[in-house]
Amino acid sequence: RLYFKFSPEGFLPRTKAKVEKIMAQREAEEKHARIVADGANWMQKQLADQNVSVPEDADQIVAILSSYYLHEKESPHREQARAIPKKTGSRSPTTIFSFLVRIGHWDIHENLDLQRYNITAQLPEAVEAHAVALSRNVSLVANGRRDLRHLPLITIDGPSTLDFDDALSLTQQDSYYE
Image (tube, rainbow, N blue to C red; front, side, top):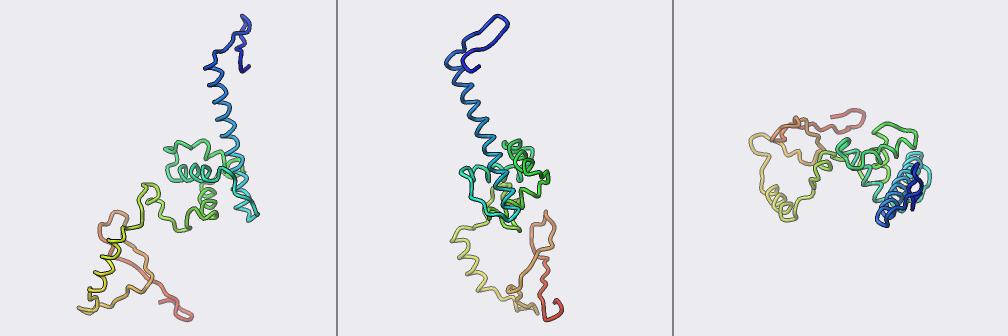
C-alpha cells in the first residue's frame, strides 16, 4: 500500500515524492502515539508515587501538557495533550497540573497568568539593587506607621488594581492566630 494505490482499475504506482510524504506521515503518527503512551505511563506512575524513569521525550511531553493547560483550545498540542491523561483514565484538567507540580516543572502556587503570557518574574539585577537601596532609605515608622515588611502577606486587591496596597497576614502565636 505504500508504493501502490489500489483502485478498481488496478494498481497505480505512487511517485517518489508521494511515498516519502506517506512515510513521513506514518513516522509522525508513530511518534505522536509514542509520546502519548510514554506521557501517560510517566503521568500515571508519577501521580501514583511509583518509581519511573523519565522518558526520552520528557521535555516535549512537558511542553505539550504545559501548552494545553495554559492555553486550552488555543494550544497547538490540544489533541495530543488531551490524549495523555485520557490514556491514564483521567479526564480532569487538574491531573495535568498535579503532574506538572509533581515532576517539579511548576510549583503548587505557580502564577499561571505569568506563564500564560510568558512574563518573567525575575527583574534585572539593576532593578533589584535599586529597589533594595530605596527600601533602606524609606522610613515607614513615621506618621504612626509600623514596619511590617517582615510578615508574610497575601494581597486582597482585585485583579484589575493598579496599586497593591491591601493585604492580610496570619501568623500562629501558640494556640491562636494573630
